[in-house]
Length: 556
Image (cartoon, rainbow, N blue to C red; front, top):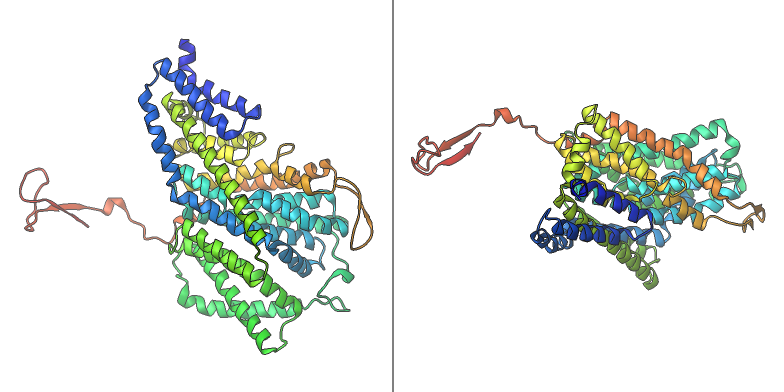
């Protein structure tokens, strides 16, 4: 019994892992574990019943947390945009834009996946949408099954890291840090990861062009008889917009501001100028732009503007993440109305899915609160701290071990389980070691992204398997017989992208400046130059301890 009491924390943690592996629902496994071991702890005298008096206050604290309101807002925004046909329009447009080059469709999938990631914030919605829309097209034109499935699954998981992401909201809440700072820190790693996927596709196009053929000329909607798409007028429009934005940014963008603010405001300026010029050309019937240029402008810029408008207001401090999410939800509804695609059924579906996801998150969070209350009561936090704080290699030794641990646990646990079970245990240790928690959170987010890609338990692979053709079928456009997609193709297709994600984990670990740039833009203060003089209310110098007058602190 003494041995059990001395090791109650590791026993409690091990029993939780066992319950999860047996398939018990996460929220109830967490809550039941916390309650059962809490009763055992009271009987053994480790703590008394007063510990559980804090439980109602903790639960009500979760319900009153304004930051978590951003989750239903961003989810609703993404679902409205995705189910109103935005994904299909974007894929068709970008596919036509890059369709003439080998790998063009795969590049389009990555680009649309990144935009869906920034709107939906939900991996299941992104992967299923891309699987239904893009997989039949890629198979129709002879793409390698492994590449097609891998690029769809990987692009869908970008919603883990590209703001405004639900994952980053949860991590910021669990680590006790600002959601805006977490968004800022994650922007560059997210864009670099998207660029890494595109570079991989381009390398395949050079080395194995048969795996990534271009779209045949007869299937390019905006091409003329010579195969020209009119992309030249799009380039001219972009150059004019960049020039105008460059002039405007002298008056709008703070040259000393953080890089993420400059990027967001710069993209908004370029997009706004391009949209205004295209709209003017259409209204005046000038005929200066090709059909492709008009299509790209009117299809891509509105959702991009909404995304970066939300991020811009958060980064500039104009709105909180919750207010930004509410603005995004209203903007999504207005965009759906403008396209005449908003219906009662679409609203019902979006609200139903949003409510389910929000309840899912809240129940897991309440269960993890019950678990962590008891776990801290049996000194579990001290047990974890003693295990990790004296590792060889100091800070980097800890980060490497945590990265390996999260990577292995991601085979069996999904993101929410990792975020609500592992992060509250690791966060305080990282904080005590002086590690920047925003950097730590982004590192975990990039690492947790692999949890959706791991064979054989990756959820992105399950989502893709559910929509990929299980039997041979006849293509409706070409009339050709298309072979089914095997489960092995999906698993093997994910491996190169898992390797890319692991390389990005190493890059974030070795170059923390990719994340910690969020601190830029402020005026640094040297604590050694701060002095506090005590004066009395009559202007005479006085000590706060000598009783001479009313001491008033004067900061210099």
